[in-house]
Length: 217
Image 1 (cartoon, rainbow, N blue to C red):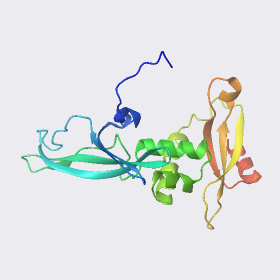
Image 2: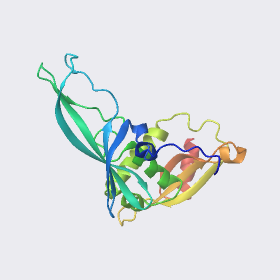
Image 3: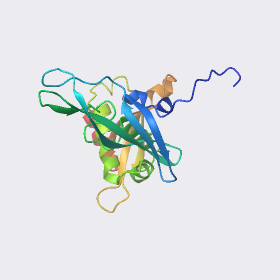
Image 4: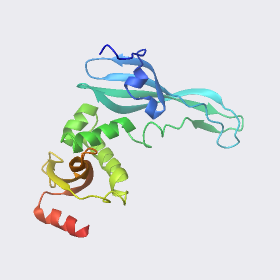
């Protein structure tokens, strides 16, 4: 501890906002949640129609659930600047560095939610509660991120020699199968060169489902 190098306290770094192209400008803490006011760090964009500089026309707000710290949900309040050009064009700042279009979760929250499901074996209900969002909001974000990272990667099975299989309670409802089977690559663990990684998520927990999955590979 005596050899540690300390820097000045920085809320943007602590909350990993710099990875989202954001900087913290304020905070509001209460018992229910922490709200971090943010602005985008990139330079103002020119008019998308003629390329000229625009005149500021105020801001609009966008609310995003973010990575929770402790047991209190964290929410980002983005102040998004609007611009008007002399040619009559209106536009606002692009927030795609912070969250997917129309998403209610930041990229940080989405990555945290996926890790909580796969690595910590939390239920979607628990994840939604910690993010302070609806169950379907959390579930859709997790599925979309899983598809983006896994199912669209044709090389994810390369070099896999050791598999791990576990069942997980995906939903706590009476409708549909509440269980899924999680398939992970344990090759890095056996070789002592890295952690296990998620390969696939199968609906149900039957031996037949896993057998069909193996045959398809």
